Length: 383
Image (cartoon, rainbow, N blue to C red):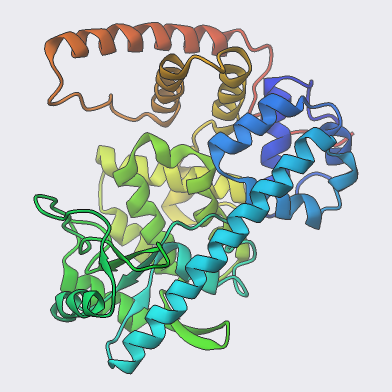
């Protein structure tokens, strides 16, 4: 079995094949490939993709630890432990909030990271991700009251909310634990709050989590929430940290209402629908599962090509912060077919400088891509 040379292309392949929930490559072949990789740039790529906890869990599950160079395994283990410790702190805040809402007889459904962590028994590796806050959905008519009541319980806005307009959740709060709590009325501004609550609450399920029964969205809603965030987030959504959630859900085999997913995507074609479908197809490719129905014909983004480019820029341009960010953003927009960065509000001088930087970055990326002697996204062949 050959995963390619120990360069940027080989590193991208090894990383993806190790993370893939449905393994395509024998573990012994992956172990051989890991021994050929350069630790420093790969560690930089893992940090950029924010997949330390997921990767470390996969390495342990596949028995690959003896094959990982110590200078890579040690910092990877340390970062995974840091993420796991932070997750436990956030878990505690979520459980306290759940008990408080139950005592107040306030219906609620957890969202995003906390919902996925609570769903881990049914979604393997759903908890192998970093979580930064507690997101909870409340009926729109109860949200403001709960937000104000939390402040009487010792919570306070993270910063001065004056002049800040957030349309899909109330301004984040935290207490002495320093864990942000966001009370949502919807997950995306275009989605009506009452429709969002009725749909999510009607399909929610209670799961046993750390001694409590907590409400989380059904798998279809969890999948859709990740899609709606990806469309709003633009280029950052095409990093492994954000593709992990849908990939884990799809690989788990839990039932998904695909008719409902296609309905929410919308009828016909539009740039937003095409981007959402392509992102979902990319997550399915990472999961190693096909999409059904009309979505089966949607081509995924060349993820391994992007990972290979990111590895290359880390290796050769590690200290060039601004230039590196432009190179990464431009490549992502090319491969994912995203629109140019919105420059509204910038001065003419900054717009001109940005335009020149983008032109240079596009030329550099296209030259690099054309110089590859084989496709980075070619499926490895077992010999």
